[in-house]
Image (tube, rainbow over all chains, first blue to last red; front, side, top):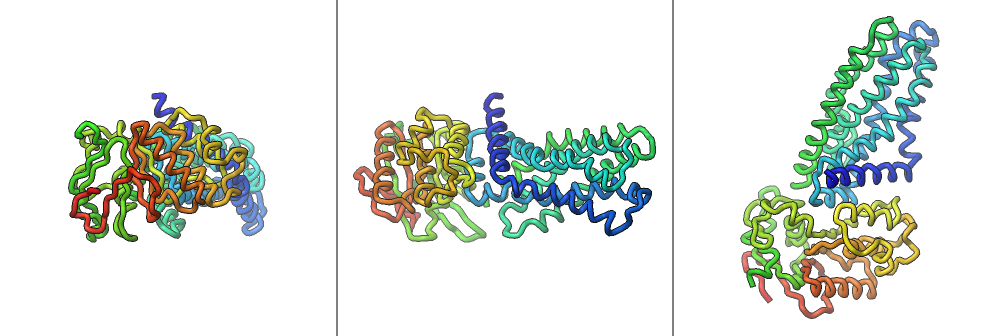
Length: 226
Length: 212
């Protein structure tokens, strides 16, 4: 157990440190998230009633795109500079470093997205009752998004221009998360109990944490071994 | 000599897209030995090292580590090898010290990172981001990994590239110390090595066995 913990924390800390050194790059998905949300009232209508209808879907689609934007680099730089190879030939389990890397990815994208979301809620005149469900849903949902995006990033790691393919691979997997994520917000706006869809998001995150690192490890071995 | 044989490779084959790259390589690596893999560009030197470090899966043949089949002692084997490839595996935005600390978290060793950096001639550079170092200096940071781990077998792929004369000498000294301490080195290089106890293995007609 200490062995596997070390694999997790070493890569978790390393990726956070790398993100800290490239703060500008890491901030761009969040800025994208906020800017696009600003365009919605400008482009469609500034009317609060119509915006309220659009808000849940818009926020979740933005979150999805912002995660995808940042996911491409998850393994590419490690692949190019040879550190992925070093990771693959390390004696420790591959799953824990991957878990660490994806967690670091969530800390640098999903978490800031969640924290920035009230700002977007404000711009889309989201009713105040929906703020807490939105943040809870985003916190769990962006975790799933990070894990699924990591599978796509692993599959496209050896490609020159993998970002479009990554999007095509991962998009269909995002559908259930979008559905339940926006349902959490919609339910709360409509005054219904929103813990149901939130629990499903939590369950999906639990499954993603348990299975995605295994899938990513298998994919990385498969791709680099040829 | 059976006991001192660290690594035995029998009839190793590797194909890429149905084109044979390595065709029946047979070689042994003994304790206290430096084995230089020779061959023209494209003869599969790097491929051979990558197979032996388990980064690639061979199409056929067997690899024995201390007489045991590799797949049966994988953890033991991987805990005792160090691979230094063409790519330095350095994160350029991290400092030399940070890069090395991540290596030691995987394969802990006895020499401290500061000592290792001093030995490779980078004293005072430990907190400089690697992208501010020259290519040769980056190479030296990568080489410092040899010092901070306790790995028994070193696989070095072109360790002398981008190094100056002193750098080359330094690597040679490291290898000498390493084999005297009971380790073994397998390396590829096109440069002549200035040390004596080097055995060569040619990959050109790789169906022919290794030898002096």
